[in-house]
Length: 368
Image 1 (cartoon, helix red, strand yellow):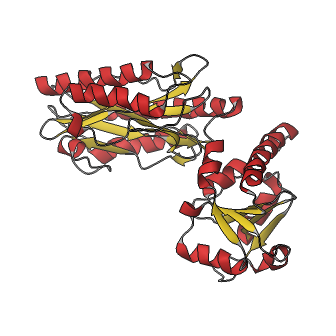
Image 2: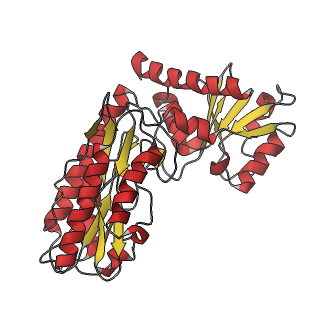
């Protein structure tokens, strides 16, 4: 890893230490896979477990024995130690390290800890006072650096390629899962580590339920089809949705599609630094309510994304998050109308100096 890359991660650690100062913490114990990747830069297998310990004086990265040599080669952190997997007292290697604190204040990401792990940490630091700092650490990731934006652009570009390839095979008579198989293949072929979530195509009745996985159902005319996918490129997620038909549509389906597309585009036009997430949501929600579909819009208007597929800012009712330059988020209002179909068009958007830039460019056409 170059000195420049190392500097990026050390600066992130220093921002975390400022959080620790404000919360008067002696130690942070991080187990959240996304947080660890953000601070370490090291990709792990999704089945692997590791722990990052941060104090004001040092950083320790604890990995499974199987991952040790690769971590020592690829990670900028100098103090990397290993633990035996599937051993009950896997952190006994840190017993002496923990003894230096008598009554430590320990930062943890509480939502990421299951009960067993939390109790184990309490046993290892029996006099510790545990403080949840998940929100503070997630906030550090909301404003992206220029390098992160460069990576996210490529992640969005890969998602566009996968969407276009999937739409090419989406014809009458093909099964939902055959379309998403093409999306998965293209994501990996173009450089994604993995899909950022389970891609799905929901057609006809499956769209307005909605059924968020692909099935054996075949595509046919006079139905609306909702295709949602994204990939992970160099640790950063993409997310895109398109709604389409494989042939003729009813007048009601045609009208619904163009109404919701207009709502989505108008909502994007409202984006700028200084506007609140709640206000953006209100713009989309009010427009859908005025169309008479309010009860059929059951989810948020959008969400931030980066190392996690869903992170701040969350674009939802009464959210006070203020949009700032270099935030990346999605705008995806949707209506799920029983007996008619569902329409959701989702794009990734970068907040700029005085407005926005749409990062996903796949055409938004009704008839595929």
